Structure formats: C-alpha cells, structure tokens
Image (cartoon, rainbow, N blue to C red; front, side, top):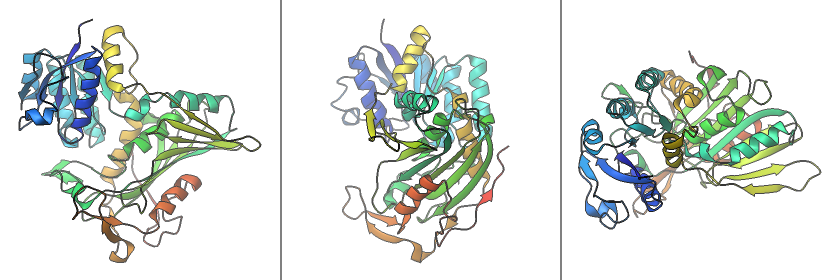
Length: 400
C-alpha cells in the first residue's frame, strides 16, 4: 500500500519525539509526513538533517491545521499541542476528514472530553489517545498472570512515580504548570500530564478504564514549585469491579516531580499470594511469589501510530480509543474541581542543582518524598496516612 499521509500539529517540545517516530515509520513505508502545523514554521535544522528521511515531497507548513489537512489530503493528524487546545484542534482536523493520534491528556475537563468525543463519533473519526504504555504487550501478560491465579486474589493496585523537573520545566511554555490560562482550563499537574501514564496504566490493568468504572476518588494535591498546579500528589480510586475478577479494586497512585533520586515509575499489583511489578516505560514485569524464584520478563510494545495506521488499513482494533480513557478523565475532572493544591512550607523542600543541561538550572526537592511515593504504592495509602508532616487529611471529591 501507499504510505499513509499525515500531518503533525506541534512539532517542537515533545513533538520532536513524534518526528523521530514518523521518520522511523517512513523508512518502513507506512507513513509520509505531508505537513507540519506550527505558529512559527520549523527550520530545516529542526526537521533534522534537512528533510532527510521524512519522505517526498517535502512537508508543507502552516499555522492552520484544518487548512493543512485539506491541502495535503492527510488521513491522520497527530496533535501534540497545549492541553487546552486539544478538543478544538481535534474537531477541526476531523471535520476535514483526518483521523487522530491525540496526545494525553485528551482534554483538560470532562465537559471538553465529552464535547470532543461526541463530535468525533458524529464524524466517524478514529481517534487514538497517546498513552504509549497501553501499547505494551506486558499488559496482556499481566492480565493472564492474574486470571491464572499466579498471585492469588488481587487485593489492590498501587503506582509510584518519582521524577524530577527543573524549575525551567514550568517556564518552557505559557501554559506549563497552570490550572487555567486566560479563563480556560489547563490542569497541567503531575497526575494529569507527566505521570498520567501511571494512572492510566493502573486502571487498564484493573480493567476499569471506562468512566463508569470509578465509584470514588480521594485526592491530596501539593506543590513545592512556584506554580498553580500540583507537582507532588496522590489519588486513591475505588473501582466498580474489574473485568477479570468482577471484584471492586482500590487503586492508589503516588507521584512527584520533586524526587531526591529520580527513578523509573511502576505499577504494583498486590495479591494475597504474591505480587507483580510493572515498570511501564521499560515494558518489564517482575513476578514475586513465596516459594518461587522471582521471574523477570521483558515484552515488546506496539506503537500507537502503527496501530492507528493498521486500524485504517485493515480494521485492527485501536489500543487506546477515547472511551478507554474515560476513567482517567474522571481523575482529571476531580483534580480540576478540587481546591487549589496546597503550597508546601518553605522548610518542606530544598533547592538543588537541576538535572538539565543548563549549568544554572535549579530544581526543588522534597526530602523523604521518594520513600513516601514508594510507600503509597506499597500500602495503598495517601500521604497524610503515611504521616507526611506537610500533608492534610484526605478529602473525597465529586466525580460526577
């Protein structure tokens, strides 16, 4: 078949990852970059070695996504733009006939998510949400271990993410670290954007990823950085009953961008006869059971853009359609409607040299947070229950 023409909206920042992925799939003859949508056109240097490896003819550039889709005849639009622009751009591209790979989070509110998904349904648009971890074949292996009783009855699922971000991370774009901007919701917090995969992956493992699968949400939102949104938070969910066992599950996610020693995020599935650890960025699974040697397995991953192309060509099932992110969007909505994150007192954090390339970069570190994040996943507990000195008691929040 001829390569599928596509356009990329948002080619800077994380969009550079998409450019490299497009380059890889172009070499396989699957896609062709027909256009790039940026307010300021990319230079030849930004495209990487000029236009080498991106197919011919050279991609058109435009600041108008809908017009670009029409002029190029693109069948796919990849949208990697600020969170609060997702719904409008998705509907604009779909209105001109493009199917979508939409970066996570899909929208900053449940209302925007509903407006977008209903519009895409009316248009008959295929849409893939960019939770790359949900393309991991490890998920199938984990579900089989659970259904086979390898760890007995599942007693809960925890997730932990201890990352570090320089202060410059929050000044890289006008919307970064904001809950709203110019009257529009953004909700760029640790659980909704950088470590959103921890939430979505835990819910997918439980088989409770649709909006109706969530029965309760507890949140604790904090910030050490001088931002509006949260950078150190935890959430505890109660699900209606997972698709493997039919039983309700407690899912707890603890996350920070102020780690002392940043590490790989993971999901921990607790059973009454063992446990499974899944490092979702590495596609690595560890099975631990009393009386058995630990078993570590590595798994392949299906790229979400490849999956979308296969869906359009032969009807292959989409791995991350919007309705399979409804439960995640309930978490986003709960964070949106929750009180503003609590500012940590000055004695609860310190400044250290940053992890970026700039010699002058600084980052804020919360002492003890690595241990608290791990304990949250281990004990399915919130920061206040772990006696963090700066944590207030938990509050259940609306999630209708």
